[in-house]
Structure formats: C-alpha cells, structure tokens
Length: 221
Image (cartoon, helix red, strand yellow):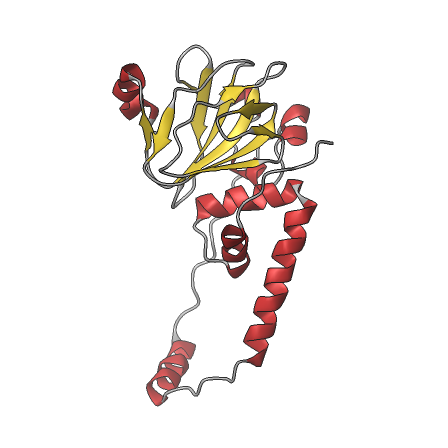
C-alpha cells in the first residue's frame, strides 16, 4: 500500500469534525478518511476536544416562550415515516475494491456502467448527487492530460486509483490535491492504469484554451 503524502488541511478536518462542511466537501473528506489512518486519528482528536469543550459549557436557561413552544409540539401529529430506501446496486468486485464507503453509496452503478460524459478522447466525468460544492468522478486515460486551467474558488481532488502529476507534485491513491485561485496547472495522468479521482469544486474552473472554454457549459465544470 502506498504511503499517503498529501492530506486535507487542518481547517477542513476540524470543520468536518464539527459537522460544518457541506455535503460535497464532507463526502471528499470522509472518503479520504476511509483510506488514511493518520487523518482519522486527527479527526478523532478534534471530535474529542470539541466534546470536552461542550461538556464544560454551562447550560443556557430556557426562555418561557421557548418552553411554551416545546410543550405545544407535544400535541403535534407524528411525522410521516420516511420513504423506503432505494435498493443499492450490486457493485462489481473492482468497484468495491477501488471505491470505499461512503463514496460508493453515491454511485448509481459499478464504475464501468456509470453514465460517463466524454470531455474529449481521453477524459470522462460523471457528476454525483450532492448538495453544496459540486462533486464529480473523473477517469483519465494513462498518460493523458486534463486541459490547463486555474480556479475561481477551491478545488479538492482525491485520487482513488492510478495517479497524476501537476505543477505542485505527484499524487497517488488516497492523496488529496488542493488548488486555489493562484494555481494554474495541467494534471497529467500517470502511465499504467487510468487515473480515477473524486474532484470537489465550490466554483467553476477557468480554462486557458479556447476549445475547453467554449465546451465548458456542456461539461458543467
């Protein structure tokens, strides 16, 4: 197993422990934690520290109107039961091996049968059903390059299989690449196997080439 060298920042890990990240970013961090014992320990420490701080807080007195509202709710009818959960797909062995939970539960099918959208001859993507920041899987052919781009916000890329290199460094399974508005880069997939990664963005990318800019509305990135 490769050693994970690139991790989410402490600000993301603390926010995840506090439950303050949106769904897209939470999914990225949780999937990284499934692969990274070091970050699991850091999140556990942050949760323990938060729990200790809450335990030391004096309880706030309840206002009269808040108590009346709480008592009034006792007479409300019981809420309707939630709809039954949809059956999960029967993922194939490669999908189970490459895609850890909780990310796997967001896939509508095994990797090879997902509704991939082509972004040219070498790159395909599929958007995941999350709220907040957008989350997508990308599959890049070995040795192929993504279009050169910068960012209008933050981009977090978690490698699930294969790897890639850019102007910052090299990233393999479990690594998280963090990019902001100051970075102009062109990720290139490593040779050997396709690079599969989860990318989460809170704003559209800024492509430098004319063709990628014209096609961006169709890619949705």
